[in-house]
Figure 1: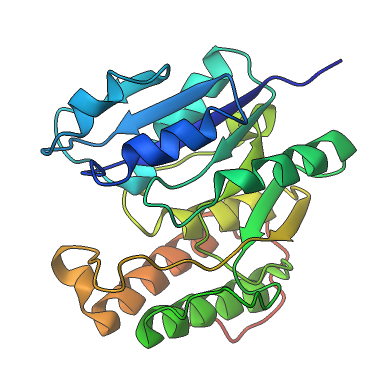
Figure 2: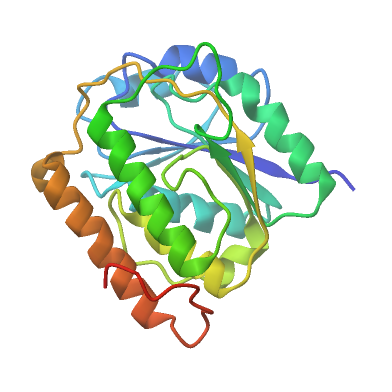
Length: 245
């Protein structure tokens, strides 16, 4: 039986990219959900010109909250899989069939894109501090949980929707992937990585607030990691005592 797949795209002030990205995504998918996280530019008006479902937040609630809304929508509408991707042209819609092929193999619960799994000749170089923090947090997740991932923060992912019912999320911001990975390990979900291109169109793009400070951002990520490890320690088989907690 053919699996029902939903493409989920979080957006926040993406008027520059939204027409080009959605036009490309529509070539590969029929079911598309956009979560507009309180955009204040022309994003809402531009969305009206595309054949997509839209959830609109009245105010900015965070990247993690947008993903949680996608999870709920996908479950209520009985989709089998949810593929998430960004709307700033940093994820290539042409890679969607790669995720679909892995879904058809039916031996994974999470299929996660990795910008570090392969060296692509057209890869962009990310800002050094972003790459350093990504690698640091990925290493700490690997050491604590034993999960074989190389890119903790890539938003290009496919989720087996029925597995998401058991999760308990309360992290609404950019640290959401850390909470997700700990709970995925606690539930012993099957994880597969596939390579995706590393694209950085705007190296000056900010996280906002205190997270623009790399030291405070890493401290925040580690605080979320430690909290999740404590919450789920009875379900986890921790592989290392060298966590930052």
